[in-house]
Image 1 (cartoon, helix red, strand yellow):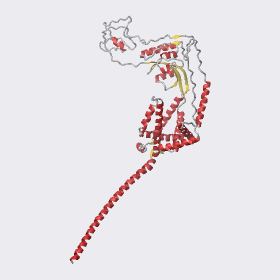
Image 2 (cartoon, one colour):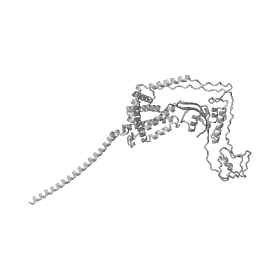
Image 3 (cartoon, one colour):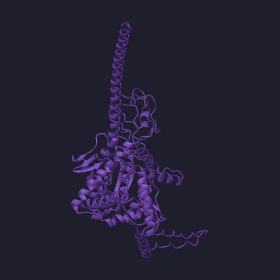
Image 4 (cartoon, helix red, strand yellow):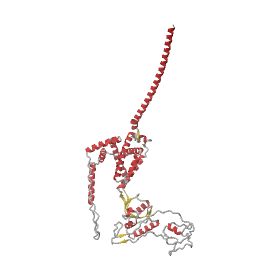
Length: 531
C-alpha cells in the first residue's frame, strides 16, 4: 500500500511539474508571438515607408505641379529636366567663354559674363529660379501668340534644329551657305558703285618715302555644307547627349526650340506694334567748354592778409572789418571769383602799390590766353561743313575753366562765329568734347531722350543754321548749331531693335505679374535629387 501511495504521489508531482512547464512554455510562446508580431509590424511599416517614399519620389512628385499659369501646369518632372538642361547649357557656355578669354590673352573681355555664369552655377536655387521663369514665360508667350494667330511650323523647327546640329559640327546648312553667298554678291555690287575719295595731287617738293605694298587679304574658305547623313548622325549624338545630361528627349528639345522661335516672332510683333520706326531728329554740332568743380575752403577771418583771400579765390564777405596788416600788391591774381564788396573796409595801413584804381568790383578776365586772331590763308570760303585745310591755323585752349571764364569764352567764340569764323575750326581748337571735337563738333543725327535736358531743350527749339547762346549743363557751357532737322527720320537700326526689345520685355514683365501665375512656396525642395 505504501508503495502504491508513493507511486501515486510521484505521478502527481510529475503532473504538477508538467502543468507548470506547460504554463511556462505557453507564456514564452505568447511572448515570442507578441515580439514577432511587433517586429513584423515594424518591418512592415519600414517597408511601407520606403515604398511610400519611392512612390512619392518617382510617381507622385514628378507629376505634382511645380507651377501653374491659369489652367496650364508645369509638372515637377518637366521642371527638373529643364533645370538639368539649363545647367548643362550654362556649363558649356562658361567653357566656351573661358576658352575665348584665353585666346584673347586674358585681357578681361569676357570676365563679366564669366563671373555671372560662375555665380549662377554656384547657386542651385538661382538656376532653378531662372529655369522656372523661362518655362512660365513660354506659356505666357504661347497664349498671346495663339491669340494673335502667330505660329511656328514644324518645318521652321526642323530648319532651326538642323542649323544647331550643323553649327555644332562646324558646318553650315544649305540655306545658310546660300544666304552668305548672296550677301557677298550684294557687298561686291555695293563696292563697285562706291565713288572713291579723290587722291590729292602730290607735292613735288615733298620728301619721297618708300612704303611696303600691303598684302592682299585672302577670303577664308567657305564652310562645308552639312549632308543628310551628317545631320542624321549629329542628331543622334545630340539626342544621346540630351538624355545623358538632362533626361530630355529630342522632341522635348524641339519644344524648347519652338518656344524660342515663338518668342522671337511675338517680340517682333509687339515691338513693331508699339514702337514707331521714325522720330523727330536733329543734326547738330556743338562746342563744349567744361567747368571745374569748385573746391571748398575754410573762410578767412581775423587779421589774415587780404592777399591770401584774393589768391585763394574766395569771396570776402561784409561780415566784419578786414584789417590788412600787409601790403596789397599787384602780385595777387584777381579773378572773377574774387568778389570785393563796397562794405569791405581797407584801412590806411594797407599800402596799395598800383596805378589802377581799385573799385568796388573787379573786372573779370580770362586767365587763359585766348587767341582771337586766327591765321587764315587762302581765298576759298570756308562754310560750316567744309573741311579744314592745312592753311587754317587756330590756336585754342581747353578747360576746365571757372564758371565765369567758360561763360566769357563761350560768348567770345559765339561772337567770332557770328563774325564769320568757321564753327568747325573753332570746335576743333576749343571744344572739350573729345568725341566730337575732331569732327568739328558734329554730333550726327539724334532724337529726343539721348541728350541731357537743358541741351535737348535748346537744340530742338533752335532754328536751322542759328548758333545758340551759351547753354549751361552739368558738363559746362555749350554753343550749339543745328545743321538739319527731320520731323520723321528713320531711327538707327540698333536703337530701334533696342527699343523694341525693351518694349517686349516690359510687356512680358506686366504679364508675369498676373495673379493667375502660381509659383511654388519651396522651390528648393523641387530641385532634382543631388542637384
